[in-house]
Length: 353
Image 1: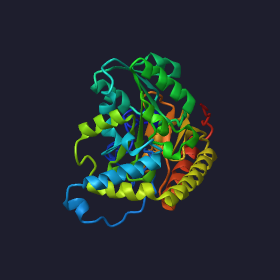
Image 2 (image 1 turned 120 degrees about the horizontal axis):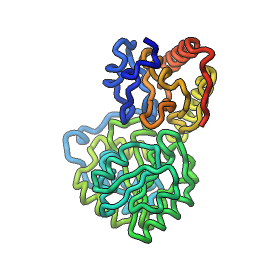
Image 3 (image 1 turned 180 degrees about the horizontal axis):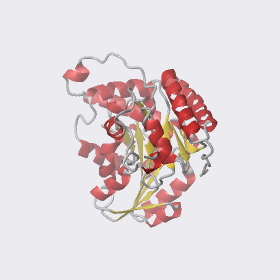
Image 4 (image 1 turned 60 degrees about the horizontal axis):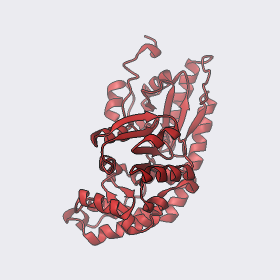
């Protein structure tokens, strides 16, 4: 059976990162899997020995305040009173959506699917829009910046103008800066979140490669942060997450070196893909985005080699690919791409977005 006709193989999930799904789709794939379906840094912040109390005792409030202070500095929050710490930004999404009474929620898409789901949970009528100007008609507007999966960046001034317009009518703009650690720093909006009408979300796990730690932050006006803190309750952030957040967010040397490393590896990935007829059209240094009429064949061919990419229900020609984590993984990816390109030689007419 031709690969392009095996629709069950190219089934799309809402999220990347499921090796259980990958194994079900490609049961004969060689192990270990190379998971390139996420935007999580494969070079995680170095592990270290945790104090025993991080596991044996409830987190101390003083340690939580220390994390908040370090995070406020790292993310440019106006003050420590403008930042709420949480066990991942995922748990914040419906709470932030509930800051506005149920109305019309508009999400600038295509983007991360969980924002729309969280808005629906909060009672909003939700729609995805492609035109930024349409967000002015929302009671609650959501912008992911840089966007996942295509890396689109909305200028800071446009976001500030939108936030002011929504605030004037009692609305709210939520800007998800999950990938701003590797985005253009001039477009960060964290420092403006204290003015009202704006909530900025920052994710710890993606850039630091520690998604399992479950740590994230909301930056907003002091009254909003107080409400979120009250809803999350005491001990919201687990002891191990506190320790990793405090150490990693303060380690600016590691962060600078890692950004350089990721930029180099993203350029290497672009070159590798181009060598085999695939042109990257967007993304960040943590993931690359491409569109090709052969996306389904490429997804399947690499999946059968034990390499998982991210495909999308909203565009069958779109794929996202993360960075390999080792030289061995780079070699497996190159071999799989070469085999796929050779198999489909003469058919690779690219669609550039």
